[in-house]
Image (cartoon, each protein chain N blue to C red):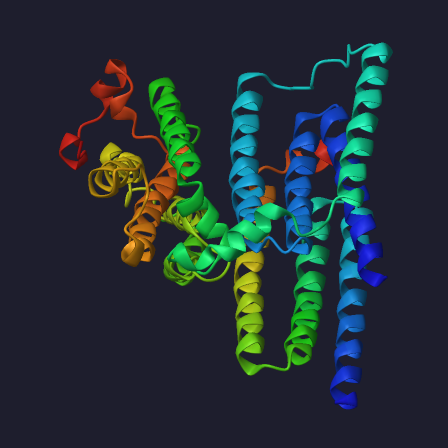
Length: 320
Length: 101
C-alpha cells in the first residue's frame, strides 16, 4: 500500500515535471526541470527493479545531457543577452488533439498491462536459456547474446553521433580554465577519479551476474574524465585518439566476423567461451562510450578545421 | 531488534526534518548565498541521518559500509559543489538580484 502511494506520487511528479519542462518560458527553467525529470525517471526505473537502466538514466539522461544543455544555454546566453523560448504558438486544437491521443495511448497501454499476464513468454524464454548465454544477468544476456545484433547497431549509432560531433567540431567548453584556479577541485578529483575508475570497472565486471554493464561503466568513466579535465585542463588536452572512440565498434564487428567464421552465424558465440566474448566486447564498448560522452564536452579542435590548425602548436601530442 | 527498529525510525524522522528545513530554506531565503547555505548544511545532515538509518535497517555490515561510503562521497562532492556555486556568486554578484524570484 505504502509503495503504491510512492509510485503514484512519482508518476504524478513525472507528468508535472514534463509539463513544466515543456511549457516554461525561460530556457534555464526548462533545463532545470529536465534534470529533475531525469532523476525522477531514474527513481521509476529503480521501483521497476531495473537498476541498470536507473544508473544509466541518472548518469547519462540527467547528468551528461543536463550538463550539455547547461553548457549550450551558457553559449546561447553569451551570444544573445537574453533568451526566452519562443511564444507558445500551438493552437488549442493541437493541444486538445495531442491530449486525446495521449489519453488513448495511456488507456490502451494500461489495459494491456492490466489484462496481460505478468510472466510473458519472452521472460520465460530468456530464463530458460540463460544458462547457455555465458552470463547470469538476464539484461546482459539479452543485450549481448540473444539480441546482440541490436547492441551492435546501437554502438554503430553512437559512433555516428561521435562522427557528427567531430564534423561539426564545436567545442562547448572552449574557454580556457586557469590550471590552478581551484585547489578544492583538484583535491576532489584526487578523491573521486580513482573511485570512479574502480567503480566503472566493478560495474563492467559485475554486469555478467547482476545489474551493470558497458553503458553504466562508460557513463561513470566519462564522468571521471570530465571531472579530471575540469580540474586539470592541460592534463588531457588534445590527446584523445579517434581510434579509441571506434574501438567498441571495431571489436564488436571483429567479433561478429570471427563468430561467422567459427560458427557460420553472426554473433553466435562459441558455447563454452560466451562469457569471455561478452566481457571482451563490453570492455571495448565501455571505453568507446566513455570517450564518446567525454568528447561531447571536449573535442580536440585540430581535427575539425584548417583555421584551428594555426592556433595549435603542440601537434606532437596528437595521436591519430 | 525492536531497539534497532526504533533507532531507524528516529533517524529517518530526524533526517526528514532536516531535509524539510533545507527545502524550505531553498524556497524561502532571499538570495543565492542563503539558499546554498540552507541546502547544503541541512541536506548533508539529513542525508547522514537517513543513510545511518538505512545502514542500520539493512542489518548487514557490508551493505551498511557501502551506504556509509555513498554518504561520504556525496558529502565531499556536495560541499565542494556548494563552494563552487558560492564562488561563482561572489565573482558575479549581478546574478543574485537578476535571476531570483
